[in-house]
Length: 87
Image 1: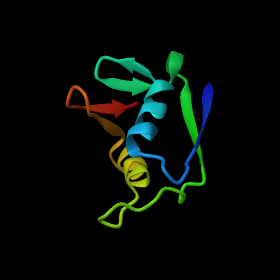
Image 2 (image 1 turned 90 degrees about the horizontal axis):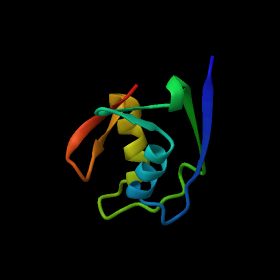
Image 3 (image 1 turned 30 degrees about the horizontal axis):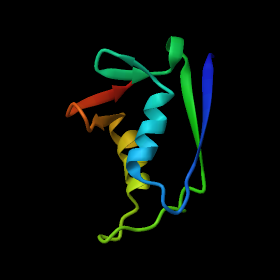
């Protein structure tokens, strides 16, 4: 099994934009999907996952982004406005 490992640390002011940019920077873009480089499996380790501040609605957006990524196997491209599958 080929794999790649990434470390992400959450801080009190970590935003969902920063988390998404960090995750996408470590994945390879293939058409409208993302995958590990050279078809490797990516393993993302997140330290201090409960660290980010809650917003006005009582949610922690970086954690919600991770939940969306795991539940729906992808991320929404905020710049070009389309869904990117993570394969």
